[in-house]
Length: 156
Image (cartoon, rainbow, N blue to C red; front, top):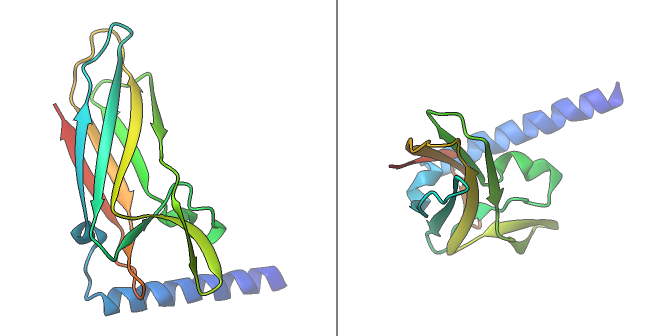
């Protein structure tokens, strides 16, 4: 029973902090602090395609790395999802290592500046459908975290 109570207290604390951060940031979303672009290779003879996503984060801001290496921040990790109209055989996303950040005795990994994330997409034979890329991000500076955003890119 005690663990249940602590879980509720923690959840309420996180919700209150998120509300306060949102109020402090004026309802600004994370997408205002990061720009994304994508480059792709041609589909090769093995039906694979390399996707390179470049995130350009505004100076003074950071995103949570993947992995973030902190249990309570896992939900805020930068995540990439790649889909297509035709079902893909597989997608393997390779996230770069983050930079260790220590904040008020907490230690976790972040991305700053320009970050490149690569993925290898395994397509079905003859599939040339556009790829839809969705990147979950949450931008923070030294005092506030903005509302999470989903950055959406289409690759023809």
